Length: 215
Image (tube, rainbow, N blue to C red):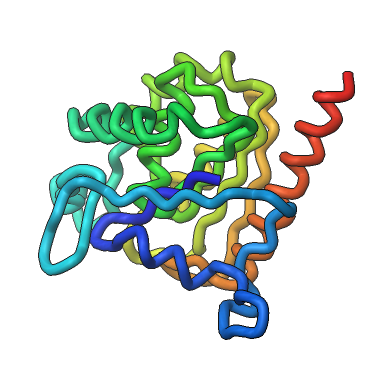
């Protein structure tokens, strides 16, 4: 499992979802991945205020028109290409099968890797993200037709548009992709219900990999 944090966050923020150590305190409703699953939380390179990080400098106001939420579907920032290469360099030695995902800007970067490179992936997780250069991504949908994809987004997200991701997941499904769509009543966050759904998704992906290995 490789999970990328959001803009203005940091890798350590994923630790709140780590299961409790034996005899110690921890998240009671955190990750419950199959035994032996290694979790990798890369740190983004761009340093903002304090200890906060980003995968590239993200000026969301530049993608906002008429007071609406940002729409990056036609944007193609160079920073996302740099971030994509950085993450791929970090995970090139990781064992397969590999599930990649992220939250917010981390989800954008994960989708960029999935739909703009040939990185071998067993699953893709997009939490509260948005599309970037969507038509460029769409050119590579065919190569990811068999990839299991989990997408979750809060209906009341005040930062990134729920409607854009609702449309995107429907587009992926119409293309014939294996998409699990989980809308929830909430904002720009990862609530316990989403954590539970991610656990189920990863278990299914591991099961699919095991079945494929026996074929």
